[in-house]
Length: 331
Image (cartoon, rainbow, N blue to C red; front, side, top):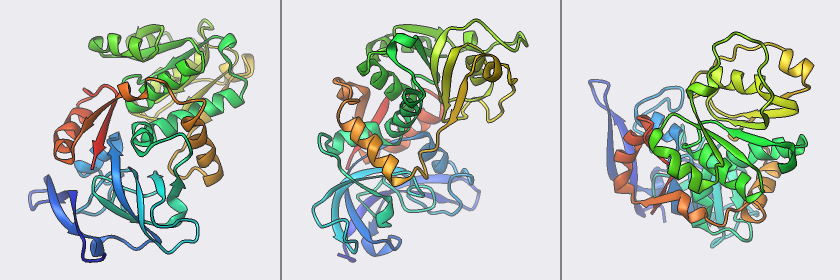
């Protein structure tokens, strides 16, 4: 098995500090140590993968490197009593694809504590249509529902709505019966967002309040925020009494300038969502929900299937903000 060769995307740094993408042949023996060797059947693309592909040291420190923070496949070797050869499994988050050889390849080897057994009701393909983005969306929605959010409480705002987390959040919320307002800066995304499940679409500018007022009109019962910055601040000021926001991203800005008024006058809550180091019991709970009651009936329509050879071009599209929905990689 150690002499088995496989196909992988490799990002390498040249002498001019440029980052080059190539599909290469690697050996299983080149993979890092770990208890579980997995043959990958499907992966997917994320913004972190795109950042890794351009040398972002906050994501990946050392090159050459194979990115890919998501993988679903079959166990080929296992030194763990929790997994046996032939098991279908999911690996997302932790250090996969960041500083550990990732899922944009035909094999990974990882610690057993990173591996989630495939829940009943979910295929490997469906697991990667969700991927880290869907898992993160699930964590956000879970936090809001546990705070008391329900469809009769009012509308839910989803920012960054054409990205992976935004798209899957809309689809899951639609399945659960919520009315959804989607925020986008892409005029060409209206049809896509409406089909996905948004009942209202507002522009990015509409959620970028510059008035300086500490509070705005109450509009939303809950918020799934993927962008941060002033859009999150505006959303917080627009929550209903007892509402909550779940923050999981910072593509607009890591800064948050607001006041305590939404929290002490309307009893609002801001949840911070981390999918990378999420404890395994909660991780399994969310995957179980995604595999059952929370699985959208039109899940397949949210993804475009591509090959590993298509990945370099799609990474550029993600970096330019031009992607709609998910890219599913069949390996």
